[in-house]
Amino acid sequence: MSNEAAIKKDIKVIIFQLKDQEYAIEVDYIQSIERMQPVTRIPRTFPFITGVMNLRGVITPIINLRKRFGVEDKEYDEATRILVVSKENLEIGFIVDGANDVIDIPVEKIEPTPEVIDGIEAEYLRGVVKIGNRLFTLLNLEKVIQE
Image (tube, rainbow, N blue to C red; front, side, top):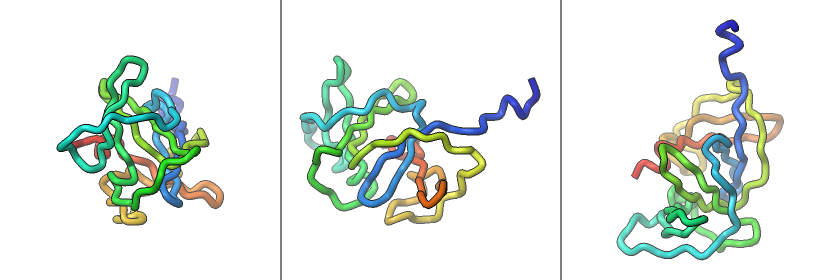
């Protein structure tokens, strides 16, 4: 097998919404997509941590991505979802406005992130991808869950 054949050409991502922007997380990190459920609040924690929930026997911290990125909050609705991601044996739920697409993104289409996108600092982002008339921002999971 040649080196070229071993290089990954596409990454599969799930597309989710926050406000009027579309973001992407690699499907490999996604454990499940859940409807909004009751979350138990935890006192004296970061404002963007909504609390914890019991997800199939696993106590999972829940992060409101709107608050994490400094986007104004909104009421949860029928489209609100919790993306349960797993990174280095840690499960975390992200509250997002909606999640509805799984697509393949060619790796060569990923471009560097501008300094700020809609007020979100570049450190939380891994790059941007334009496919047709849609623009997706890839999350840098390490930075989002760092604290």
